[in-house]
Length: 427
Ligand code: AMP
Ligand code: MG
Image (cartoon, rainbow, N blue to C red; front, side, top):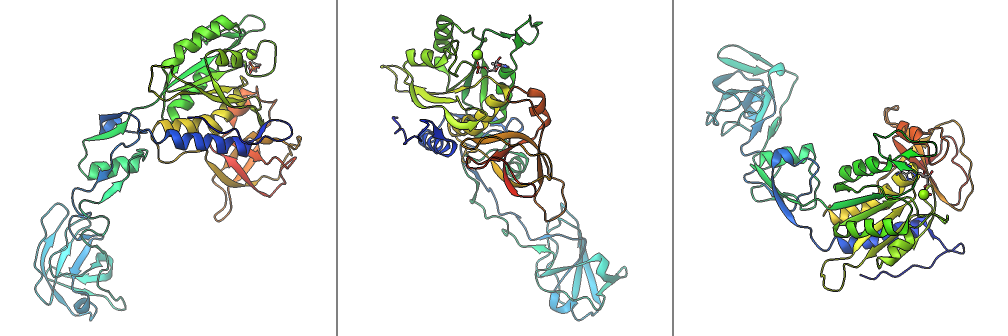
């Protein structure tokens, strides 16, 4: 799968939009090879991706269903406000009563089947009833169809209600349950190798010596991968040494997707790109006009002469935590979604209104994605309001942990105006 390298700008780097288009194109091609299928129990299915459609095993509802407690009737009769004799009663769980003789009504509860002959349900609150008779109180009227969901109005037996590629959240799991699926066919989760690199990294349990830091990208990316439908495979962190990187890349070769963090900038100890090149990588881009994340690298490694398997896609993410998170959300999640068989692929953007506070001026020429907090509980009819979270740059993990989105500053703008409609990147 060879991709054309699009024309680059004068600075030699792709714009964010060009890089995103290239990744989307790659993802679309990879989405053509369907992943392996798995059969799992419905209780295990949260977050999984349907491999086969969910089909209605009967009409929904399977019988004309009352949506209210009240009296089933013929609308034309009840609308005259005549006294109607109560012919019987049906509550939820009982078989349909009736048929309804002319001039009568039938007591009915929410969820119960409407007796044959009735074409409306009048609400209990709108009638005057004795033990034997009921009358619709004026000035209330009633029309045929009121408070009844007709058999099959929601779905017909045999209808495909959820397509392959749908992610199973609570509503989809409820629908599968309603259709009788104790087990569902889902796609196997792609195995995502996560390789953090850097001489400064120590494990979470270790006390960092002066100059060392704990490896926070490993657990962060494992969480992001899991949230976006992958099976994270956290490799031991590798030092900034060619042989160590070669060995780690060889180990990761069986993954479906490889995420490497650190070592992709232009420094003396940024050895990841050469290591990927030694492993036979084809680079689709090396650097994007964005901030944070400018050094991000994307490519794939062919599996070797004997193999029919598709090449191993990789992303080299800059080591700063905010850079790693943003580049994963913008590029990694899209590729992962394709490999996972998801019908919808990100990144997810939304509109918000810029809060009337502190400006974040920067240079134009880079698309910027800055940690922000968006309040989704604003006044009705208003866009949610987003504000920058104060930060010390892309190493500021504490700031990112206080954020719930990233504000997008377009390449041709230095800042965002208070009150302007702006874009946010959702996690
Ligand atoms: P690099 O991309 O290797 O130039 O690293 C950029 C910055 O990110 C440096 O300050 C690194 O110490 C930091 N960094 C690199 N890897 C990690 C990691 N796994 N966890 C937390 N910070 C990291
Ligand atoms: Mg480094």
